[in-house]
Image (cartoon, rainbow, N blue to C red; front, side):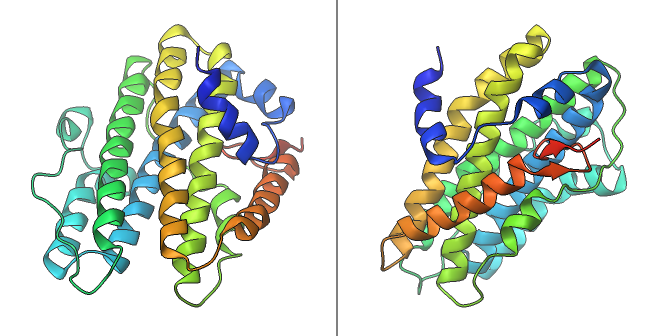
Length: 252
């Protein structure tokens, strides 16, 4: 029922999730790390969008507002402050984010990224609900090599830095969508339904990132997309000593 969403994802990515990763991820003892790392991935996805808005699009008052929006989530994730009840209803920002007046693409970036942030923070809360229903205690886990492995290839001059970061955002969202679909059939019904419900938003997120990247670039981005497709596929298909939501082939 969701294959039409996955067809462009599979065409965009250079490889599918390896069977070895799925076999490891579906083990019952792996569920805590799957959920906790997923929780943190939702926060990091939101943070990445927030950093883009703060650096490239928002005025000074809105920059501070964005930091305040993330504060309760970051305090929970990094300091252990707060709980399911204190985070309830915090994913919606109360005031609009105001664009810089001197940037030609500020408003479009804000519109797409604010919607993405709202959805990622809501997903954060939904993962936390699933963890709470299973009495899975939150313990911070370090990030995998995946995002760092992509970001180290970002060019260091503008606007290519921004374009590369947007392309990377597209690959992270596309891979998340593909991995949710791959893992869903092996999970309990509530998690399976949750993962399937995420596919539509994740598929839209990757397209939004690509659209923004092409709008900002004065040249066709196809060559740069192809470059990152190879980098991303290597991270997913090569041996990995750690198990995380975006890790590669288990090497143990």
